[in-house]
Image (cartoon, rainbow over all chains, first blue to last red; front, side, top):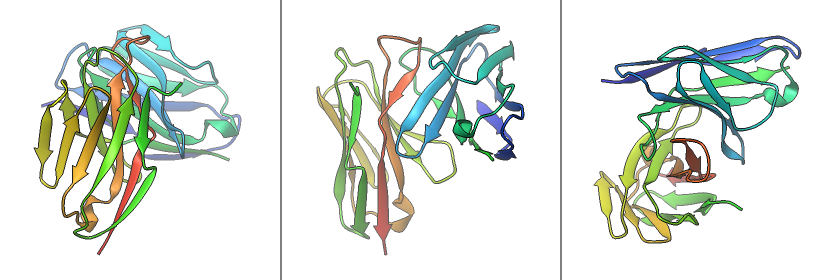
Length: 112
Length: 112
């Protein structure tokens, strides 16, 4: 069966520090991978998606970047965090268009 | 313009008091509507996929239905453990390959 792992679960970082969140998927190959941010009252905002190794598309220009160094690994990064980067970050995967997502457990990021 | 709108934003029920949550969408040629449940601090958990008007799916006290313009999540005789935020989503036809557009959710609270 397919599983998705996301870590860390919580993170408190100072403004200006770097960020690296990791997501891995098991039990499937060539998944579509997604990073979302969820802010209170604003719903789920798509940040990045990837349909293959090294293929990254950004939906929202911002202080973050994403990479996919391996087929089932998706990384969200920042060189310098801003206060506005605080939020709940979710990784998800699906098989392709019109398929539902399986989500990771999420990372609560607080930038102080 | 929002493509997925959920109502109400919040719903408080007494245990055993049945009700419905609404998800309306503006996309044409729907290729799937997805319902998720999200508990605080966790990633959304998949509940149902509906593909065509008239389709219904059930799981325990939940039943999802779909028309050409909206979907309902009916909760029959809810229990406190049904308290969660319920999200609906549709595929994004105008942009990213495979990504879903989410509503902002309905926060359900069931009091004993």
